[in-house]
Image 1 (tube, rainbow, N blue to C red):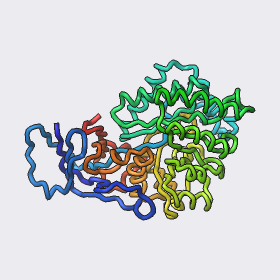
Image 2: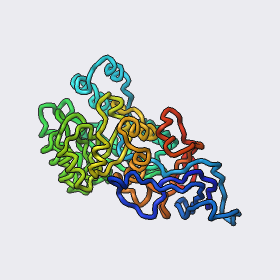
Image 3: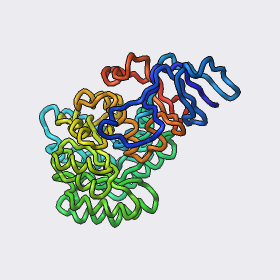
Image 4: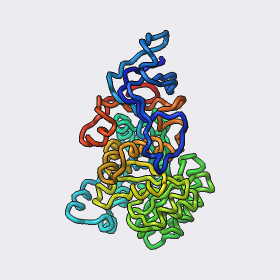
Length: 413
């Protein structure tokens, strides 16, 4: 069944060409007011102004849907999540309220190690069912493509369990799912004083199994003081690159870790977090094709300074927005809130935030030819909003769910 959607108040992010957006181009958000949209076999097949379509009558095999002044935009492309986890960590949330720092919680076996312990205890089927429930909820909120990381196993079997769950999600989800191997999330207790031993395990035991079972698209490392230093990060990334895994690096979250410059050196697809940046890191990123993925949810939840989005954008960096959905530092995958935070706390324009969460987010998963804009031939993965007075109202009204319906491959979910 082909579909013609009429009476769209704002058709948002309409583009003939797909290009990674940076600088002034990030603020340009092409919109058709009072629009229609044509969908054929789950793909966008045409669009335009209502005045050009006239009184359209449905032909055989075609349905006409009146949008009744909803606005329509491409789905959110969430390029950084950890949604495969075994249990929430609200007890640490209380500790944070009482004043404990991220590092203090980690030092007493909390944080990532807490999630790793629970992950290794849970049955794979239960882990899959929990993760599918989370992913289904995110699709209802407008997420139409997602990247999911491992990193809570920290053992050979634990990491493989996570990646197998992600592979199963790929197989049943109607949206594109990208898998990232993040075995280098932290050092497990058994290797706390033997960093080389754990890195050898990643390279010689985990990566061969991942390659054999085709379990990952990318490799990631938490490049940070107290975790993996730049030399260790490069060693692990290059081992992953040998089996075809392109790097994505957790960089510059807590300190000037060198992760940004290393990511640029390695040709990483993205460097993610970037709460702590200086001029050298910003200029390195600006002069590269590496995307800076900003995760304001984590800064919000941890009460950390937000990423310097304006300095990054003004320097010419390509930036994306993602949720960092995880049980410890960002227990929400609501990309609508991410877009609001980007505007409220990082001073991004609504147009910049929407572009960063759609088209640039698609680039950060190498999905730009399928998703991220209203472009002929791309998937009809779309957000239909409630009637809104303007595009700026989306991030402005941060406490209201403005998603009326989400469409995946031309069908409402």
